Length: 265
Image (cartoon, rainbow, N blue to C red; front, side, top):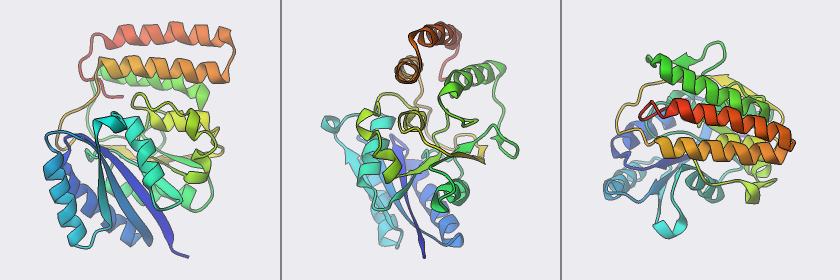
């Protein structure tokens, strides 16, 4: 039986990355024997007309790619874009990845494999296991922030990289708690793992590459939203005392992030 995979890619001013992302991704899935579709979930921006043009050209060239441009009435932000993309996905198995090529398209078959092969309910492209890592140098401050943010999320999931935006799951799993998933913030993978109580979770080693084009979208606002997200998830899972302790740790994290601009978790 042919394995089928819907790949949802949230975008905002990522025009320069669309063609290399799509062509490299389909080369990888074809080699792996996976029938894939790519759904570009674009938050309307000045780059949207050009992004639509590129997607139309790729579709005309035979690539199974389509775009949905979200108007402001449909909401904004990465997490809500991913959730809407999963609703619109054609196939049962769905993968989310960034458009900026920091997630290598060649890694898509490996990240999807545990779910496609029914070995896991949720799989994560992890930087934090043997064989994974960073393809560029992060400053000590950024490493500290990333490690702290990861540590705060670890009680909610067995994944070694709960901050990852490179993950795979199924419609069946998502439907367990789709209506309770918080569409605010950037860490939708963590939200799904925690709300849907995914088990088992599989980590797959990836190399997180340096951004090829465009600019980082992460700001202090997203850091605050992450703290808010953690509080809701802790409240859903643990007692009020643990939530209080988590709040103290999160305030420490926010204090650290105030000294860093354009933080990348």
